[in-house]
Every structure is written in C-alpha cells, then in structure tokens.
Image (cartoon, rainbow, N blue to C red; front, side, top):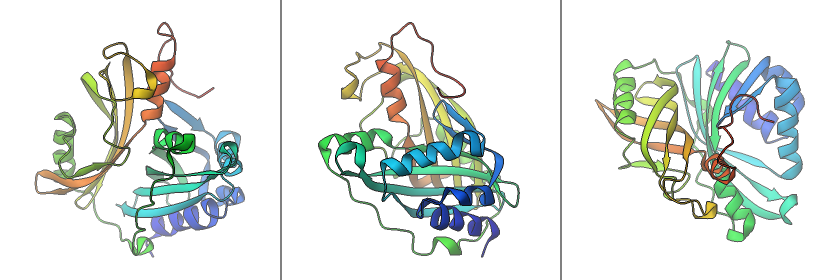
Length: 268
C-alpha cells in the first residue's frame, strides 16, 4: 500500500470513524495545523484534538465516507462526506461534503487545508432533512502515487483565473451562492497527481446575492469565500471534478456589524 495512503487509512478508520483521538499523536506531528476558511487551528494537542472531540460529542455516531483519494507521494487530497445525528438538534440527521488537502513529513501529517459544507449541514439540522450520502470509492486504499504534472497545474491555474466556470465540475456545496462581483482570486495551495489537481482558492469580492438566510442586500459588503477543489484535466482543459466552498463563513461575514474587520488568523 502507498505509504501516504496507508496513513490516511489510519486517519479515517482508526481515528475518525472510531472517534479515537489518542491515534492523533501517532499520525499527526505536534504542530499539526488545520486551515478552514479564515480559521487556523495550530497545534495538535492544544487546539485540534479538543475541536475534534467537541465534534464527536455533538455527533456521537459521526461517520466519514471516502469518495476519492489522489496523491503525488508528498501531498494528498481526500474527498469525503461526513454524516451523523446531532444531539444538539434533537437527533436530527445530516450529511455534508468536504475536501481536505494534506501534507506530511513522510511519517506524520503536518497540515490540512479543508473545507466542509457546514451551511448545508445547518440547513439540514434546521429541519430540511438529511441529503443522501454519495457512493463510497470502490478501492480508496489501493490508490497509487502519481507524479506531479506541470501541464495539468497550468490548465487549472488558467481555469481559476477565468472564474472557475461550471460545466462538468460539480459544486458539492450547491448551486445557490454566494455570488461575488469583481472578485479577485488568490491560490493558497495547489498540487497535482497525474491528471488530477487539488487546490484551495480565496476569493474576495462584493456580495452579489445567493444566500437568502443572510437577508443581506446585493453589493452590501465585501466578503471572502474559500473554495477547495479536486478536479481532473485532459490536455489543457478541466474536464470535471468537485468544489466545496465555505458558504457558512460568508453568511457569518454578512451577519457581522459592517464596521468590524474581516476575521484573520487564530479563531476565537
């Protein structure tokens, strides 16, 4: 088994699906850092493990289903769903998508850029009902490392610069917003494995609608929208893939008083 994939099997099977945070010390470096939206959890024991334990308390039966893994040996992308029943919402159930981009030192995980569709989760727990969990990957733990591909990376960089047009790329967080006007995109991380390319992008622009729960008017605020993607290329074009964006952070941005700055760095 590919060494990085074997480590991720422990991450999924032994840690996440068994809710055994003791495994974290074996598979994550002490300085392990999770980056989600504008938030940073830096430090395995100080910040990450307590946050994971809180999630397991809210969802006592939380499960993670793997849909896709790609790796070049030093970096790895995991596309997944999490699903469970929330004790904070009377046992209501939800399933939500996510994509994580991991880096390791050859032994333990160092960093993860991840986005999960927590706005969809909020809507489901508010009474919308759970959405179906997509089919699992047939053989995720048999994935082999594929070398980086500069041509594929160049194709995706051009596609991002063009605004990430839809076509055959599925937006796992839904088609409803946010829409941003005059948005600028910054690539936070991007890597390839054969024809597959994974990335996180931060878009900054004027809110132009698409999130009805905020009640915000179009053009009312400048917001940041973080998107993680795992796409597949063919020659110089993107032929398909998946995106997950942090819509919930945008909702929170729009709900804050306008005179407060955008959040940055460590979460409160």
